[in-house]
Image (cartoon, rainbow, N blue to C red; front, side):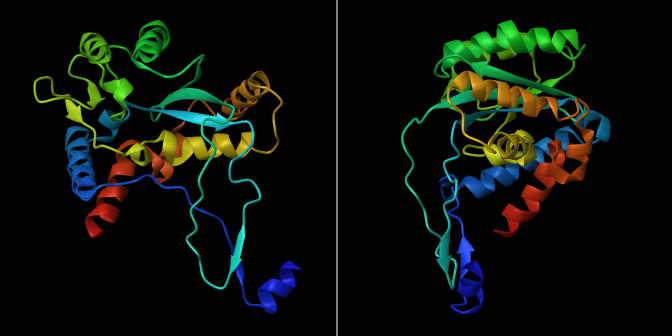
Length: 248
């Protein structure tokens, strides 16, 4: 049937693409933020000190499983998704040398739970690796990351060494552009690797899904330079983003 559709009907399969909404000024702000990151971390050694981080939802059943549209031209079809299907929320961070995670959120990610993750889990992880006094922590501009309690702990534990969303009265040491998760190393390419390895089957409960995520993380070497050096890590992401978004 597929051979007939390709050769007889001259149509090809297309999958729907899920994208983030962007405003008119987002491209310029992305460019400015990438330029600031590159200026701050101008050497290879300095770039190894940036811990790029992100949260990600892994679903028990892949939401785009087996969804294919046959057409002579790409229909650019979008699809509405079920609200809050069964999933686990995970956090991970990457430098060019370390993969830290996964951390699983037991409930909704809010300011209190994110603060607790930083104080009781991430900071001890960084201390054990000898990174706490030297690493820069990056996170995006999610409301959870913008809470006063979160910014207070960042200023205390990472004084002058965090990248995120600030305010006119309390600016971030380095600003992060809004709606830009795809500029981080976890999004390029960590989450794609983890999701690809987890999505091979369906899961009966969240505990099975968590174990599958942990198994997937164990398949990635703690020395992440092999991933980052292929144009996906740290400032390399910003370099490609400057080129793409400036052209846009």
